[in-house]
Image (tube, rainbow, N blue to C red; front, side):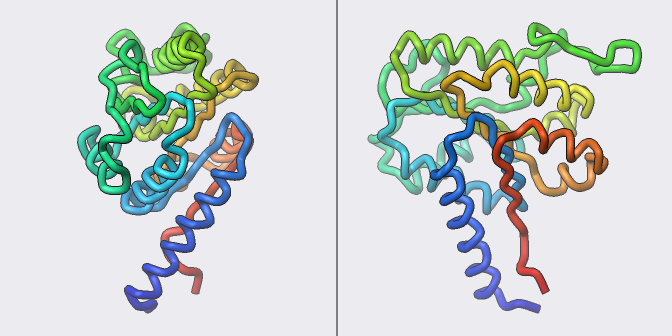
Length: 222
């Protein structure tokens, strides 16, 4: 069994490699498959800290951790005076504002029904998060922002009425609608959700919707 020290070094390399790939990326749609929350926290907090001065809107939609947990984690790696946590898109006025919402609240509205065989497709108007993305992009344009970065945990699609068919439709629609915009979308999949809840064909379909694919391992290979 690898020692705790070896595991720690392995995790640090994984985080470092992931950060390098994210920073060098110019793509608009990235999938990040993460092994655990500890590793994910290191990735998004360090990445956002590196780019904190950019003229952009950042939106983080966590699922397996709370909104307050994300705020606390970001404060640990940044000077809290450098950033402000806005409550809605209408109050973003400064360069360093960050929006944080529970992804379930954004993705799962009471009016949305589970997809079924008789209704296998969706339009962009049927997906609340698509409307949310569009509104945020419009707001960013009004504020002359250079980019909008969305960090979206896809957990609700596996743990609510938002089923896998809904997930596949969302990925297809969002990759088409926002391809040539200032949106930089990071779809976050917990490794267990991606590997256990999705069949091989579904995994491939999800991956095909993304321009950059980052798969983080949770332990060194034997």
